[in-house]
Structure formats: C-alpha cells, structure tokens
Length: 599
Image 1 (cartoon, one colour):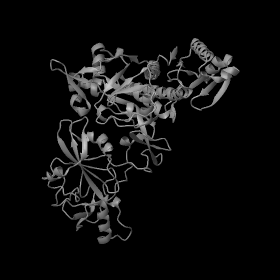
Image 2 (cartoon, helix red, strand yellow):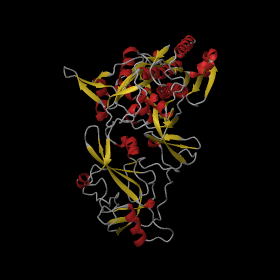
Image 3 (tube, helix red, strand yellow):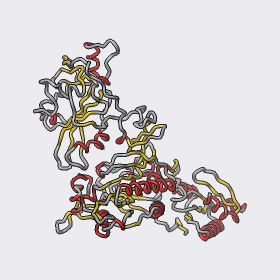
C-alpha cells in the first residue's frame, strides 16, 4: 500500500504542545499520530491508528497461540453486577457513573471482570467446557484526578483484558503461566524491554500477581531488583525482619521528661544529652515513630490508623495503601492522608509529637477510651523483644526501654516504610537497587472472588457443583504505543521499531524536476508491488528541509530519498535509527530496501 503525503490527513507541528510533559506525548502530537480532545482523552489519526493496529495484531496472535478466543463487550455497562461485587462503591471517585433518561444507573467500564464472569455463567455449566480463556481489546474509562503524560495516564484508554476459567487451582496455575509466557513474547516482539515483578493485587483481589514494568526514568512505578534476580514493585517488597529477642532480662521501661522534643531529631539530641549510653550514641533507629494517618473508606467513613515505624524510616503512603486493605472492614479503593489537627483533637489520647503505643500500666494505651477505633499497626522491624524510645502519650514525656510484646501489643504488622537502595532482598539474593518503570501489563490469580460473588459454578466429574477459579490478565495497548515512542526517539523525532512502524519505507521526492517525481513514484509502486507499505512524500511545493524534517519526525525506520543524486543514477537510502546513509543505483533501490526491511 502507498500512502501519499499530499492526500494524507496529517499536519505536523514544529513546536511542542504546551501541555506535554514527556517525549512520547510531545512527539505523537507533533508527528500527527494523536490529537488532544479533552484532558486525558485523545483522537487517533491515520498514522497513529496504523501503529495501534499493529500492536493489537501482535497481541491477538500471541493470545491465539495459547488458545484464547476474542470477544467484545460494551463499554457502557449496567450498575447491578458491580453492586453485587461491591465495586460500584469500592472504585470510589475513579468510576465514571451516569444515568439514562429513565434514571437507571450505568458506568463506563474501568475493567470487565463482572461481565466476563456473567457471560461464562450464561453459557457454560460443566467441567467439560473448561479450561477456557477469552479476551477483548476494548476502551476503558477511569476518572483520573490528574491525567498526565499523554497516553500514559489518560481517562480513556485501550486495554487487552483476558480471563481464564478453570475447575481447580492446578488449572489456574497452568493458565497463569500460559498468559505469563504470552506476555513475555508480546513485549519481545514489540521490542519493549520489560521486567516482570512481584506485585500486590490491590482492589482486584486474588493471590499471585505480577506486573510487567518497562524501565524508564519517567515511570510512575518504583520497583526494586537485585543482582541475584529478585524483582518486585515497591508496594510488594517484604522486609527482612530481625529475629525476636529474649527480653526476660531487659530492665523495665521508664518515662523521662523530654520537653520540646516533638520530632525525631530533637528526641535523639535530648536522649544523648540526658540519657547517654556507654556503648554507642542513640540514633533515630532506636526510636519508635508513630505516624497517624486518616483513611477514607469507600463508604465515606473516616478512620484513623497509627503505624509504628523505626524513627529513621519514612512512611511510604503507596505501600500503606497497597497493604492496609487486610486490616480494614471494607475492601476497595480508599483515600489516605496524614491525620489533620481536627482528627487529633477528637482523640484525646493522641498527644501530637509524643504519641506512643502505651505502657502496660495506667498510662493511656492506644485503643482505650479516648483513642477508640484507632487501629495500631507496626513495621516488621518491631519484633518481640525489640526495645524503643517512644512517646508516652503525655506532653513533654517519652518512654525509654519500651519493649515490644512485653510492654505493648499491636493489631497487625504492615509493610509501610520506604524501601531504600541497599536494603536486603527478601529471598536472600543480595542488596536491592531502585528503578522507575511504566506498568505495561498486570496478571492476577483472581481465584474465586468474582465467581463466588456472581455464582459461577459448574458440575465437576462427580456431578457436584464447584465454584470456578479465575485469572485476570491485562495489557495496556495505548500505553504500549506511548512506551514505544518514549523509548524510540531522538531529538529529531520518532524512530519506530520496524514491526509496529506505520510503513516499511518513507520515500521522499526532493527537488522540482519531473524526473525526480516520476522516478520516486515508480520506486514507490515497485516497493508496494513487492509487498511493502510505503509512505511517499509527493508534495510538489514543499522544501527539502521540511520533507526531511517530517520524515525524521514520523519515524519510519527506512528513508529513501530521490533527489539530485538522480543525475548520477543513484538514490539515498538512510537508516533512521543509526543515521547511516548510502547511495544505491536506482535499479537496485527496491532490492536494497527489501534487504533493509528483512534485516
């Protein structure tokens, strides 16, 4: 096929769009691949659709290779199935909700777990029908508070979501591994580096979960990896906790006056000044910092949570959000922030700057009257027998030698603190390094959460009804286009990997002579006849500088220029990625392009 620039619906831009922050956003708009329709919402233009469809085709081929079958659901869905699974409430403000003219509630689907489950329930009833894997490539909608980075964080986006249905857990394991392998092949074919990392399931629920992250400095996700092969999203990293300590011989805790010490730094200074130790100075790691957070549940209720962490560690709210669901009465998306002054005033036992877990004496204890409904969680480093300096719940006083388990307890252990470069990998594979990445795919072992909620059962080999076990697997399709643009460009424009480029070759007629245009047109026709997709810049009154600038901006991997060299019987063949150019005889141009495409 030949696409002629003289008639292509395209307008390139010389300047970056004012709202663009990252390279992919700037270049996809400038090169005429997408156009902004509203914040976080984009129109796809012909060249952009060409790249998008090639990404989709690679995904379809790899899904077919594992036996998955394609379906297509509506994006506009009724409220009722999402009420059954509580996600009508749990999704919170991220869900687009609307009503029809009769007042019935609908949503624009962020994901389709409920619809897949109900479809299988409607059609299948026996173990003989399983295993089954079905998928769709469909628009999704999430009301992002701050859509940014073009296609990387939008309100409307295209995702491939697939679901597996099995009779038992062994079948789920096999389906999960099949999808995992398909994902690795998809990203390899796209030429997109990814790192599979352990992840948390979040609002999706389920057990085993992995993300496929594309390493890049602009990534929104922080992940860790070790030289020994461990990799995890930072939210899923588990702390290497110290062993419990025998506290039988430890002295009793004592309360000391520590006026004007509301911060860890001032507390450590005071401790070293008034309670010096012979073996070493006190440090922030010897203190127990109690951080008060306010959680807004999907129901709208506001609840306080206090997390006790070593004083040398900061609390990472993303890690808290990923892990706190196990301790809350309601699942789903939550709001999380530092507690306000008003929150503290409502809980009289919480003395700002001097909050502690309490003593096993008459001192106020978290959870007692005055601090009711306050959940107290601790970092894994707070092990039985560990001794701490911490608040005494009295203004100007701290407790020295407060021993975990002996002197105070907790409601649970939570991964909540920042992960640092050099922390030990939980599998013993060495120290961790931090990196940034874009989430390109996510796979979950959902288990029976949605099947139970929606009563998806089949008859097993013994004629007994069993709940089907499910897996969920997503790939960001529009995000893949953005990630490819992000990792394949230079200061002149895009440089598409060959298997997703909008054309195999970009033919440029440079000059004003009739022979130049007739030769360029003939070469374009011969290339098309040879089975190649061609972009042909046949614009008659456009300068060579603009034509070459557009060719580099559009990013087709091979550029063939027909110009002044024609007088010597040659055309210029240029590799867009390496910048290497060579003159080839006109008669050999088609063969040279085919060789470049095959390389």
